[in-house]
Image 1 (cartoon, rainbow, N blue to C red):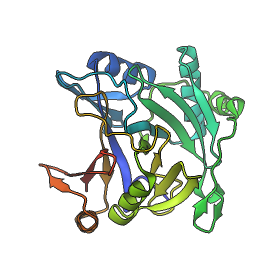
Image 2 (cartoon, rainbow, N blue to C red):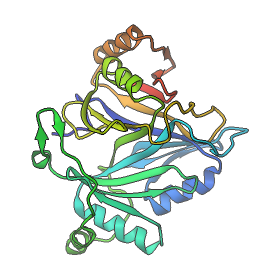
Image 3 (tube, one colour):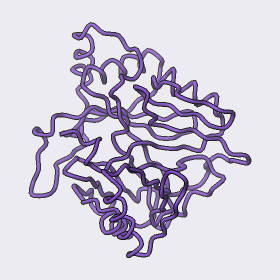
Image 4 (cartoon, rainbow, N blue to C red):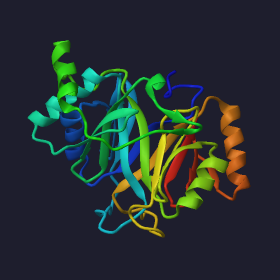
Length: 283
């Protein structure tokens, strides 16, 4: 099953408020390997295979993030297979990029930050039939990555890194929130996701149609942290893509029923979770 296309509700795009647009474009094209799809003086769309996955915008008067706020923990770029993860691992190592890594049982992942300290995960999924489910909870861990095996998959392919492959997608987003119970109610009762795993009382992982997670939610920045201010760099919004207009209408009604505001823009609806993270609802 493809967990990143209709009829599954999934994260399709992430928008960031950035301080230095050109420096960030350079990083995301040369280091991460995105294509530059469109650019103006204030905005750039980047992605793979002609699909926009990341939107960078610069706003007048924007300041760096200096406090603990709700917002982005990381966004996660999903590669099609292990050899592609190996190719970018070798590329990042050659560029001297500081990396973290982990085997999550359901996936193998690399972690890094962009020049403005936005968290990035780059990962590949194991096949869904290899995931270990106990009732409605998927087993995940933070085990050491078999980096040698990942690199070997790249070397055996005989291919070299040429940027992000065309079938790269936005795999998931992981957010800092201010209150886990409030977030759970919003995302379950409002947006219609289900919890697929938890990490104590510190983090929740939620999904549609039994993915290992489309969204992570944590309180690692502290309980009761404020929303990211409008003029502070960081997460601008993320986009949820729905199967059709009916599904989006159902979700809109559910959101309003629990007291969340939903506003209409020209080509999307927008709401905010209880921690102030903006979510664009698209079909």
